Image (cartoon, rainbow, N blue to C red):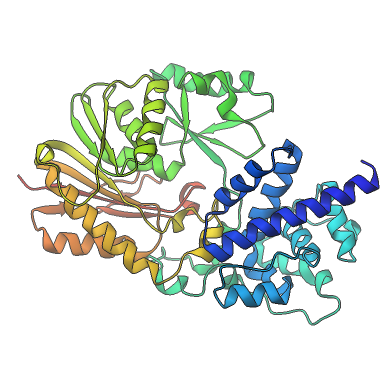
Length: 458
């Protein structure tokens, strides 16, 4: 690429990333939506441009706890003061943008990143020989060249997550610590898919089919305990562009999310209510486990999400899913004591997805947890009367915070002695659970997720 064109691309990409970052951090908007807005406004962007924007943006957010020490002072000051409008001057951002790629240990620098390095007064040769396997704690030395004209600040692992996290975390397993969690949060997550093939033989042949249909080489690894779950390491493959996806042979769904369906363990012919269905990944899984027999009532307050679920159910060939808007305030009269099982996968902080959505670390406030907890208890109270005597109630969140998980369940059980925790086997690890399970990223290279299984006494 001619030098002039490289310089233009680097300048445009830096301007775009700072524009998106200012709206994400200043207005507390999801980074993926801000990125989508920018790309929608700029139709001329090609796939290479969009990749550089996406890779750089999410890398900056993943390492923002350290990279903010390289950020322009006016931007940093405005952000720390809570300003919604953050400065968008991009000329001083080259050190931040290039350092994000270095910290990711991805040294196949695109031309724009090479230009940012040169603008920062650095050269790629400084980073030769660095291994992608370098532990997070040791990557601090990667930043030393960026501080050549000022003292190197202290960089501790805990700065890569919000300062309140350690006080709000669910209890960590013995032998782990906050440092263990941070190490995992800095790792790029794999893609997990769930086979929707009609029989086990077809499910086992799904990896071979995708290998044939995908233009990029890929390798799918089955989970040892969850036969419909397959892991794909990120390689840029567009799985949704395959014929297998268009025919409903699989859905993209994280392993921890799939584990919730295994905990529910619905049987063919039963009636289940997915109270907060959203886009419907768990509704589809329930319908599949029921072998398309029985009924899954899928409700959500957002009509757009139910429309999305309708399309996904049609693609997967599921005729036993019924859709209904529900505000989560009270139990529909027709739902009272009707269901063999009710799944309450409530809105939450989504802290368990911070590997994939690092902007959540900086846009989630400690004060918001109280409001989430109030909403979760309200929805759980409104959905529980739908469980028939002897039926199952499953509460789940993609959170790793105690206020949204154990505290909500314990308060519910105290107020409703007719429900008791139900022991079961953890689908991911195979270990026994007394009823409440907090999954962590290291359990299966997945999101963090909380699940509680309860039974209503007869």
